[in-house]
Amino acid sequence: MVKHVILWKLKEEFSAEEKQQIKAGIKEGLESLAGQIPGMTEIKVNIDGLPSSTVDVMLDTTFEDEQALRNYSTNPKHVAVADSKVRPYTAVRSCIDYEC
Image 1: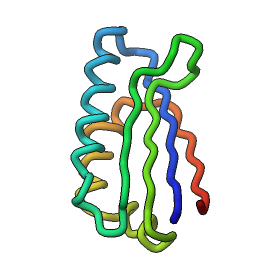
Image 2 (image 1 turned 135 degrees about the vertical axis):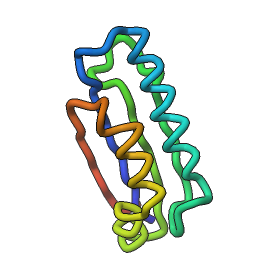
Image 3 (image 1 turned 90 degrees about the vertical axis):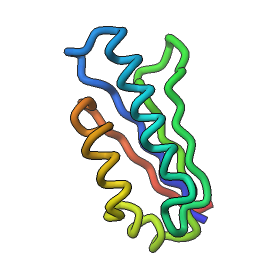
Image 4 (image 1 turned 60 degrees about the vertical axis):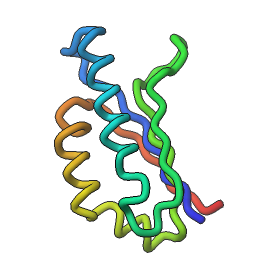
């Protein structure tokens, strides 16, 4: 199994209310991929970090293997969500992939 975890910080130009809407859209968009991506066994998006958090959104996914993760990165369904719900609104992206 392979874990793929991403942390995003939203752009500062958005108000607190806009950020809440954006985070909800990211969560809805990414979690809608459950069962749609071959080799992805789990997907969770956390948008309710504590005030001590330094990022706004966490994506936590599990894949059968590294090849499934590579395939996910170019899957048209994933790319569509990333291009419409994530990339336009995020300023910083940090990622860790690891075997478990």
